[in-house]
Amino acid sequence: MNRTSRRALRRLLAGIGAAAVLLAAGACSSGGTGDTGGSGGGATGRPTGTVTVFAAASLQESFTTLGKTFEKRYPGTKVAFNFGGSDSLAAGITGGAPADVFASASPRTMKTVTDAGDAAGTPATFVRNRLEIAALQGNPDHISSLKDLTRSGLKVVLCAGTVPCGAATRTALEASGLKLTPVSYEQDVKSALTKVELKEADAAVVYRTDVKAAGGKVEGVEFPESAEAVNDYPIVRLKNAENASGAKAFLALVNSAEGRKVLGAAGFLTP
Figure 1: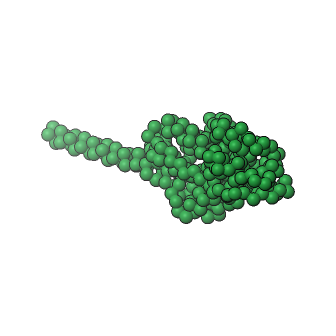
Figure 2 (figure 1 turned 90 degrees about the vertical axis):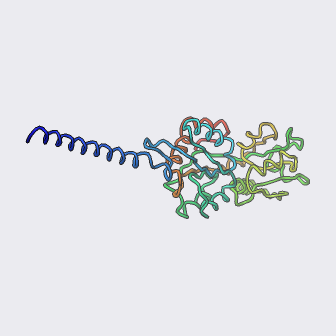
Figure 3 (figure 1 turned 180 degrees about the vertical axis):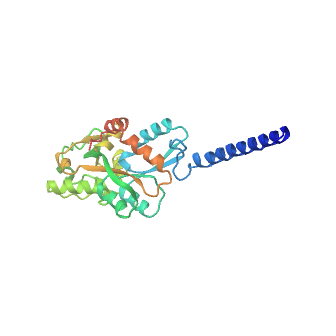
């Protein structure tokens, strides 16, 4: 082979090598960082995008705090919350509402989601909560027990029986042998608490975490029957989560030492 032929062969081989490098780079760029839609994670698995969390109303303050922590830890992410009665949230999920995580105030409402096949994995209890009476600021009616709520002329608000706090209240009343006719049934615990804060009711049976979150706007009254109606709070990633990696990261934060500290400070009990 003469010098000219050898020079042409070298140019051909160099061209083939460059093309191979370009093809390999193109394959990496198309497969390595393109998974930012369905999973919400990049090449390293870090969460990106929006994580949609459906959570019981009683979790509003603590989860809002954890949401801010999550967004700070993973720049560019956003946690979008939908707080409400657990039964309504469960119905929304089984009806097709887009969500990545569901945190319920009772195993019964979580069962609605698992029975429909909408949970990814087994729900895990991450906190517990117990009831407390929220009386008007300063407790002018001198309420000291669950029995006091049956007094004539006292305007009492309860959660609806389909809501976990309402079901727990019914259990506590049955345990004490008391009957109570409220002036209204509310669809979530925050609505019941607000009635007292606005002085539209004299008292409400809510969670101890809600009394604490009220920050002195109401007077908390503990009652022994609440021990008969402690609620477990399960949480789960949802099967059709659009941001699976974000959902996993949020669950990891909730179950971390930092998450337990925030929840404990809000008044939740450890499982």
